Image (cartoon, rainbow, N blue to C red; front, side, top):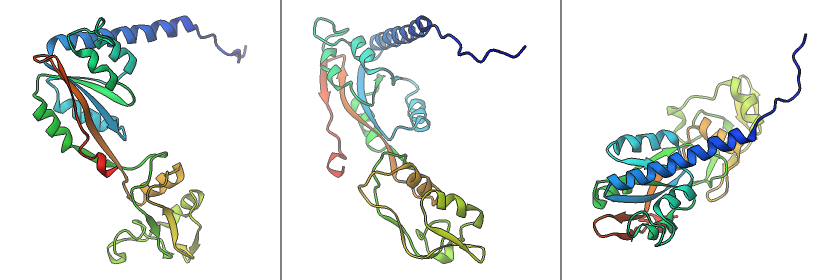
Length: 238
């Protein structure tokens, strides 16, 4: 007898229970860590990549990093003076919004701030981000780096990719087994938002336009119970 194709029933109460358990665990873990570390840093992330965040976790293996629901983390620290878990922590919670996480550590602010100021990783852009430079592929035979390096140092694009790049928007054709363009092709313009076809082409040509960067927004110190805002050293460059 054939199996029924009717949709299976999903008990939402079980989903809600699991979600509540995760929130409770995050809440408890943040408070536990707050008891064991002398500094709490709120950090923001640009161009999030789990691989690079894992590297940061490894560097701070003697500390705790939380990157979860911001409302839960803020509530764990305390939203008001009356609710704050430790004195002064409520002044930190306004910074816990958007794509941010918490670093709880015994390392001094000078060391932590210096590390993040000098840490960045370049990666391929994803759809929705803005191009950081113009990129135009010159007319003629299309090379693997799209004209980014001298022709004598490059190799022609394999003919097997012609269908793919044409699908992604490049007006290419095959001429005697070579992928060619009749005219220059402007792939992207600096400051304009990239779509998925553009990012796929940029990756194919080896052009990275995304920078994974972490910026500490503010930190709390147990000894002083004070919160210190941190100015982004790269803010003027954006």
